[in-house]
Image (cartoon, rainbow, N blue to C red; front, side, top):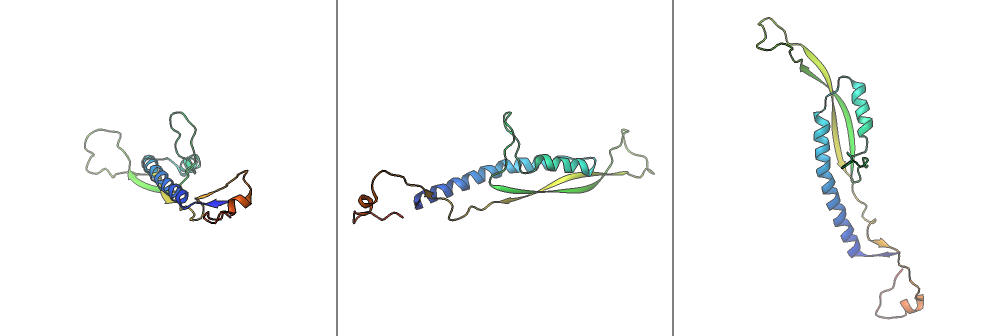
Length: 142
């Protein structure tokens, strides 16, 4: 096993780039989820089960798990005025009727890459160890 600082730097840059791209897709997912309304809490829980840990599939592909973020879904009851069935201004004595609908809230947390994870690779060779470590100018591999 050999550690390369240059490879570690490249992998860290690739990780942050991929995390930023996923954050953009995550923002659209959160906006989509936040606009949905559900009639009962069980429907909202079923939607959570469908969304749990997965992003939307693109171009007919199956959904993939989120790789760089962890999502927490919550169900919140929202009281809002019920839409009137009749047109026009309501009569003076009419009391607005409220209905309860349920919405999903999403909390996203970015995953942090371990510092010692990137940069390691396996070096396999057919050259003998004495020829590798015999050179005084070459760094020793361990």
